[in-house]
Image (cartoon, rainbow, N blue to C red; front, side):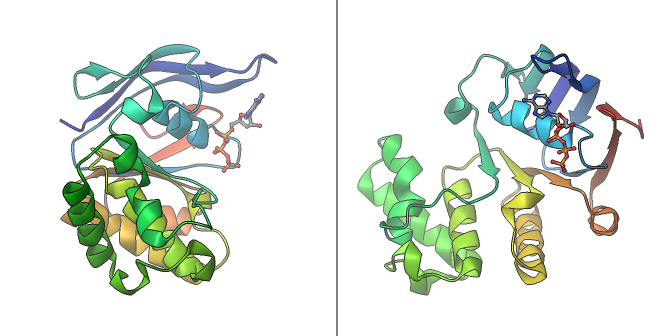
Length: 216
Ligand SMILES: Nc1ncnc2c1ncn2[C@@H]1O[C@H](COP(=O)(O)OP(=O)(O)OP(=O)(O)O)[C@@H](O)[C@H]1O
């Protein structure tokens, strides 16, 4: 089950700043959930805590019945699409997509099938053997999404800074993550500062202010 449950989640930084205040929330399996609020309201902090990139000060995060608090990020069955893609320029698109599968010691034929299925899904079969440095930003963005989905995560976490650079890249990314939600049945959590965008997306909208959810 890919539901996410946040129970009384708090994030207090060492300087005493409370970024997330007692947030409780249930996200159902397969939902597309958009977090929106002004800069600094804590929405990215929530995403980073779910992904395991930020320590939790108190509270619990569950994926289905599984408590995630003390599970390493790579073992959480979540994929993250954040800024900079973290692609390796000297490797080919294929090698970048396959990286996580290789680290998990998957058999070569399984890796091959998964990589080819992923590029087909995103319509970029033609770039498989190119080095990342030879790709356009639009292709790099899709390669990053291939890499995020190829490990068959249950949930995809996307921060809006993933699509940086142009409106076109952003529109592409939104289209892709909605397809990932609908066609691959992944639960998607998306963080955005843009109100019009947030209200135009299908699914659940979570509004935040000063570390709290305001529309519950
Ligand atoms: N290490 C830190 N120490 C103290 N405060 C921090 C630290 N990291 C982040 N913050 C503060 O926590 C608050 C929430 O940050 P967060 O990145 O979650 O905001 P956000 O709502 O996603 O905004 P943005 O869209 O600008 O990223 C901000 O006010 C930020 O300044």
